[in-house]
Amino acid sequence: MAKKIGKNIIMTIMIPVIMFVFFYALCAVTGKGPFGTAADFQYILYTSVYSGLFALALGINITSGRFDFSLGATMILAIIIGGNFAKNHHMGAAGLLIVTVLVGMIIGLASGIIYVSLKLPPMVSSLGLAIVYEAIAFMLNRAKGIKLVGKSHMLVFAKMPGALILIIVVLAVLVILWDHSKFGYNRAALASGQKIATDVGINEKKNALICYIIAGALLGLAGVVYISKFGSVSPETGLGSSTYFMTAFLPFFIGGAIAKYSSHPIGIYMGAISQAILVSGLAKLGASSSVQTVINGIVVMAFLIYTANSYKFVEVKMFKEKLEQAKQTRQQTAK
Image (cartoon, rainbow, N blue to C red; front, side):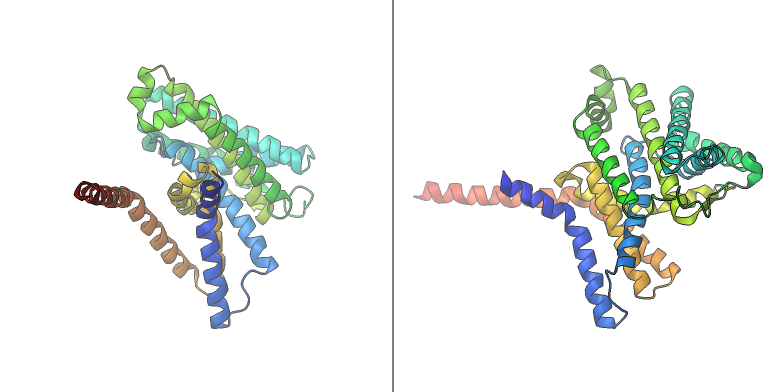
């Protein structure tokens, strides 16, 4: 048992550890300066928390076949409404966090109700919602978005210890929901086979609504982390909000590859740390943003290929085990 737990821990952290060691050695060899400084870790923490929250929001629906194109628009709308409310009522960091998460949950509930009511393909309904949410965000506060520059007492969730406490609490809650609750069991059953799950009495609509609400809460948190880093968020139009969640795909795919060794939320966050190390390492090496985008895309493609063909590795392993068993059987028969 202890051996299995140790193996799972090693496999869970292996990708980010290998990536860190790789860039540490590469920066040392090329003379680009030490990698792993306090500034590097600060950047890695912020990037991993922000992209990890987005990846978790993406993963909660996409694993059930619901791709939500309105993720970025939801985050922007939640932080503009919640941030301005907290600012106007002189709330601190806790007030900003609570109000924005509540607004995100309400927006998520609205998205879920529209999805289950209209019965349109998720891509279609979420695309329409993205446009609507962008328009609403643009109408609010005279299209100025939200600015909290200079209000340092509210912007504490992009650095230590705020960001670390936030992600630990989020992961603890999600692990309980995913692995130790009726909701998590029903969600896994629906993802594995919706018809069979509904036939045995699982309410797919109720489960979908809960998924959308949780995704909205995660996006509200992502908005708080983002504004804590940059101090302001501006409304987007023309589906410009889609750029906000592009960083979520690599953590999601890495998380899918290593989730079998731990909980799925933990796997996704390990993927977010891996991506943050990749981006930080490339920046340290002086790679341009376009080069970083290309390399990030290549890594995403590599994990897509691995995920699509992972069953082949299992088949090869099973085939070798059967050959070994057959060989042992022949040897025993010969004796």
